[in-house]
Amino acid sequence: MKGFLIILIGLCLLLAVTNPDKENFLEWVHVRIEKEADSSMDAMVRHMVTKPLLQSSTVRKDYIFFSVFIVDEIVSEKYIVLGILNQFIKITDEDIVDIVSG
Image (cartoon, rainbow, N blue to C red; front, side, top):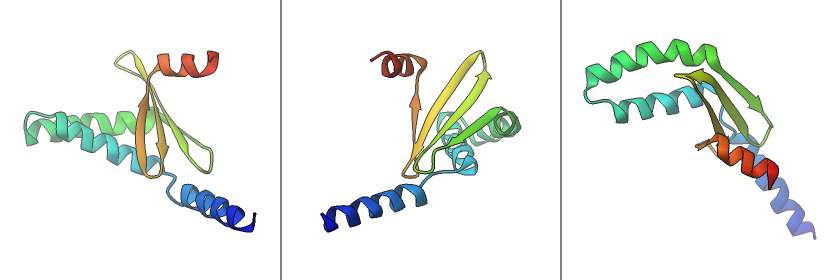
């Protein structure tokens, strides 16, 4: 029982320490933009346009062990991304409906 409690506390600490913040999220988006760009100039232009837009339209909900990032309606689509263990997972609206109704 004592070993289980130590493992559980360690896991909780790991999750809390690796919970990404908004700057980590914006950097992740920047890397994705660079990968999708046709050239370095295209990536630079996309980054210059999207960075201020993302900073103002992204909301981070911090749940201590993970975060949910909500990007409101850029190009008429709402993006929801789960951040956990310094990783990001895009969640579509259909996934959320399935989780809530399931």
